[in-house]
Length: 348
Image (cartoon, rainbow, N blue to C red; front, side, top):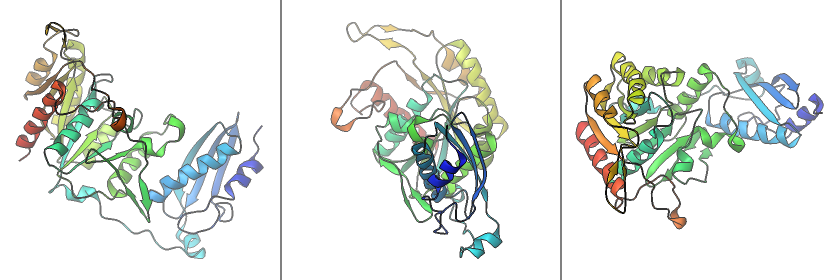
């Protein structure tokens, strides 16, 4: 059975990034609980909500798991100014936020009413298609609980952390940041709304984005905390609503559209995913999930269907592995390129 002493011994080797001293030496561990080898820690650090905190999280989780913990839960609070000064630290400086670029960057939130409709697939292919049109593009995997963008794009590396900034990973000329980069062993995320909102703030404020023409936000399905945070952070965001042709999916997606309208977000259009299956042998289309959901949703939201995407699978290139990205010469890749061109036209 793991003991408090073992956990503290493990943390003696972990340094507070800004003060250069051990977490134990700084008395940074304010709360330590162990139950069934599951460890919960509350720590005070000099500059929470920074890139260094994310790196520190990984170091703590690794150290405590190596000591025998099955899982590690972390909470952070700000160390008092007196303590920071005592150990030779300086006040936290506020960086340049991506949120201040809303006059230069088109923020496009891709959302849906429910999961399983291919929203993330639409997000990554829209981002790569815009980049192929010569645009400077970034994507935030804001689906905190169901992050999948790195896997879909075949990303194996992690962002670099230099000083107080995170540098996004670039793939297919798209700058990428995701919660998946900061989670060990695909662990489930159990944070509640306020902490999730803070992480989104970090993605905007602590990431060293290049100048962007478009930032794609892959939102969680539904109208929960993260979607509300995005709506409040980005008053000028535009939205694309993803649905399937099924009437129920379209009905649920209408809620996400209604939230966009109520918060004065512009809806660029509806994407109907899984619209049909086209046989390679006969060329015949089979409407596996029915018909009409996209058109009905677009009519209700007073917008248009900007793409109908069939069921399919990209050709897998083992040397440049990206299981969800379509090439431009693939029939579905051509649909995404057409959709990207429409988005560019609508955002001029």
